[in-house]
Amino acid sequence: MVLTGSCPCPGSWPRTHGAHLHLQAREDPTPTAAAVPSACCAMKDRLRERARVRRAALARENPDFAVRVARFAEQLPLSPKTVVAGYHPFNDEADPLELMKALAALGHPLALPLVRPGKALRFAEWAIGAPTRSNRFGILEPEPPGLALKPAAILVPLLAFDAEGHRLGYGGGYYDRALENSTALAIGIAYAGQEVEKLPRESHDRPLDLVVTETGARAFG
Image (tube, rainbow, N blue to C red; front, side):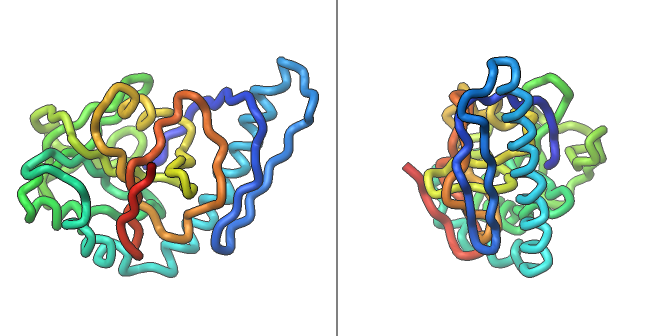
């Protein structure tokens, strides 16, 4: 799911790296107040650009990702019959659909996000194979929108994640806002190679509770 937006983010930017991924951003140690937001956003955009290149390579290297990640459905700490919100993968996003199928087989109702510019994400009931439509971003969502549901777990797409569960998103803040006042588990879906040493974070960033990759499910915190 690719959604863009602004990113005012004062503070320093540490070096980050992962398997075959080396990202570095530097900031003037004494920038003017006016210069900080634009410089910060430019650096974060560069991190995103490089992470997208890396993710595209990982997608090519892992054509069986969706099947492999589905094996870990029973490892997720979910109460019986709780609602899980997933997403339809867009471009090179790690594909959660087989995992969602496995979770549905375990009795979990599924939902997909409804994305509207400037609005908080809403989640609508959906089942594997049910009709979808492409929204203005090109992302598939239920057609017609199903019953509104409150998920107990939200599968989250990302560009990169670090060892403390922080994620690099697309800059729109949709998932951060959806998780801000929610008790839902935030479960990142990613290729293992998307992990980096350390990511910058802001006060509003909601870290992941878990991440599921082709190598397994891993909890943070």
